[in-house]
Length: 320
Ligand code: GLV
Image (cartoon, rainbow, N blue to C red):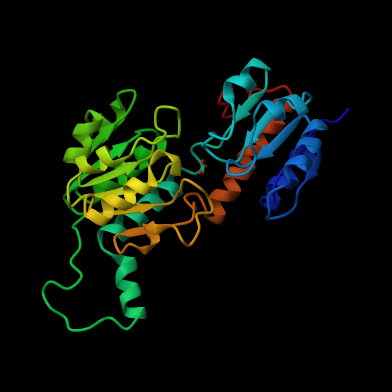
C-alpha cells in the first residue's frame, strides 16, 4: 500500500507535486489553518503530516488520535508546538527545516535592527501625518549601527548569520550560548559573555535562541534594566521569550532605547497591543522566513523529509 502524507496547509505547489510523485496525499489546500478535528482525522489515516509551527499542535491528544502517523515533517525551524519527548517515546520522528531559512531570517532580524536604530518607521509616519516641521540639528536623532557592539543570544545558525552581517558594519561581536561557538570566535572574532554581561555591554541585543523551558519569559524588567539606555533589543525568536508588558514599560522609560520584534506572546497580536503605541518600537508580523525562495525551500525540505522516511531512508534534517 502506498504511504499517505497529509499536508495541513497550502504550501508551494512544487512541494505538493513532489509528494504526489511518491505518495498518496491529503491536502488542506487553504491559507486558513486546518480545523483541529479535520487535522486529527486526516492524520489518523496518514503515515506523515506536513505541519506549520504556528498552527498544528503535536501533543498527547494528537499522538493518541493518530497512531499510524510516524513522521511529523514541520515546515519551520522552531518546534515549540511539538511535544518532542512524547513523540520520541512513541517512535514518532520529527523533522524541521533548518539552514534553508537562515539567511532570510537573519535579513529580517537586520531589517528590525536597522529600522529600530534609525527610526525608519517613526520617520515615515511623521511625514505621512504631516508632522515634518522645521529641520534642526537635533531632529529625529537615532543610534549609530556602524562600529558598535552586537550581542547575540543564541549563536546557532540564525544567530551566526546575524553576527556575520555585523562584521560588514564593523561591529564588535559578543554572544551568549549554551555551548561555545568556536567557529564564530575563529571567523568573526566573536567573544563569549555571560548573559548579564552581554546585556550590559551590547549596543544591540538580538534574541535568536529557540523557545524552551529555559528561555520562556527570559527578557523581563530585570533584563531590560541591565541594558544601556542607548541599546536596541531585537526579538527574532518567539514572542514568549519576552515579557511584553515589561518590554512596554521598559521602552516607555527609555531603557532599552528602542526595540524591534517579529514575534509576540499571542499571534496574531491585536492592533491594540500597547507596544504599537510606542514611537520606539517597530514590529513585523512573524515573517522572518517569508520570501518566495525560502518558503519554497522550506516546503520542499519538509516534503523530502517525509518522503525519505516513508521510503525507509534516514530523515534529512531530523530533530529527534
Ligand atoms: C519560524 O518561526 C520558524 O520556526 O521557522
